[in-house]
Image 1 (cartoon, rainbow, N blue to C red):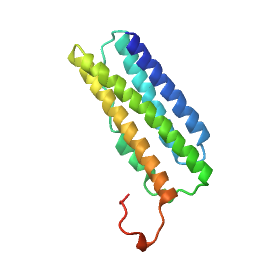
Image 2 (image 1 turned 180 degrees about the vertical axis):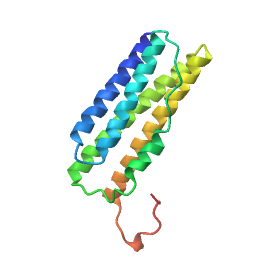
Image 3 (image 1 turned 90 degrees about the horizontal axis):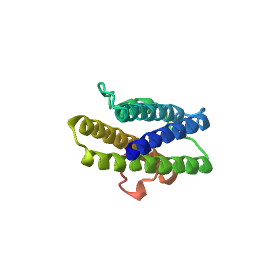
Length: 162
């Protein structure tokens, strides 16, 4: 059960981190993403707490984070930022991606140790959620790197489409 308590603490730490980042990014579109991620980490912590307290889990919430995030970024235009700001945002995405990967690894271990179907369903759900979070963060970091590195000139040949 110590692993489960660790997972709950990890989810609370993730929620706290995303809320801090939301506060820092109040004036830009990343605020919405950070708040959404914080709320999801809060839900994950509650689900794990229910499991720790041996409460019967109700239906797991919708796991469609990626679709919600994509709609946030439709039509926001180009990201205009100073280099220092981009570096800070890239640091945020690297750190947050590492947090999400740690969650994936932990839940994968729990999945392999699961003794009943309810636990397998829970950890499969959490792994899927954390993989979506990782994908979101990775894509946002990629967009920032592309904005920093990309030079518009036909002489540079074929570029990866994004």
